[in-house]
Length: 453
Image (cartoon, rainbow, N blue to C red; front, top):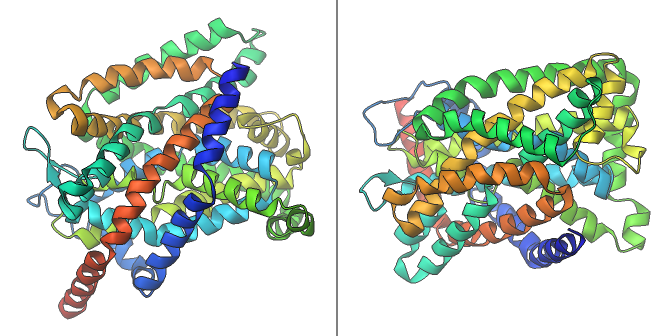
């Protein structure tokens, strides 16, 4: 296991070098300037689209705007918001959160561009069904000469969306909360049993396809987000005098003299961007696969829906998790990492029942991600091996749940980080090359919108 940790760490460090950070942040900055901040002027319109004001069941696609939004959000609002934030603070300090915010800010326009393209360049799979995602954006928008990028994305996509991180952290939480209270010592066998139980539950939804996933996600996401926000608000109200100092610490730590003089600032930025990308997935390419299934003939409309996700995911939920960890002071504990750090914050912030509240919240978080991820994996598998065989991926996905429940956290984080980096390369390159198409479509859409209003 130690050798595996070293190998995956080297893989992650290599992939998350300066070129990738420039591609993600520079690409987001380019989208921001190139669009002239246009999407930012239409947040109210985006909310109306999500509410169903513009739904038309006769338009092409499989799920409505809200279901597409919920499916994508159920994958992003997951354990990354609870454990991922804790990992960021444990490895990079409070300042890492600032760089998560930077990632999310640029991620707004990145998601607008990538998810607009997902509808604009939908393609047909081997059965003739309409599909969306970076692999189809590349083949339909850039042509067959660029297909190698689509293949690269799909190969990485099958691994990147495995639920190993979510299951690993959920298993750890159950071990630290439920088993401890029952007087049971956690072991490989208790982890294995947990993995089997999660597998059984997830299978009921996963094998139902995107329509069932969208239906479940649309009901699960609003409830879980509200429940978690209310729980964290209780903690923040209890430590209200520490909230502003906590926010100040995030800013000061992001540019601390120690980090700058010690040469650690670059690593701090990379840590924040890594965890931000893992949290909101902007530029990674997963969300476009969900939004590509939306019932709409207006690509820009779906891009507007998608741009709300980094705000909800990183700006709101991740920030609340970070503040809970910072104001309670648990971030100073060098021995805690991942879900354990968040757990300690809840135990201190809501004495007596905090850990039970957290286990309920993360049950919804973990399950929502488990339901959404296999859809992405089957689409990647189907693109490579044919849509008729894509159901086979679900069995591989189910088996990986057992792996996630029994493997070490560092191996899993490094593996997924590295593969996410591979997915980002074709996603961002294709979006940058096709950006003029998005800008032209946006100007046309907003012109028509003003005329109709």
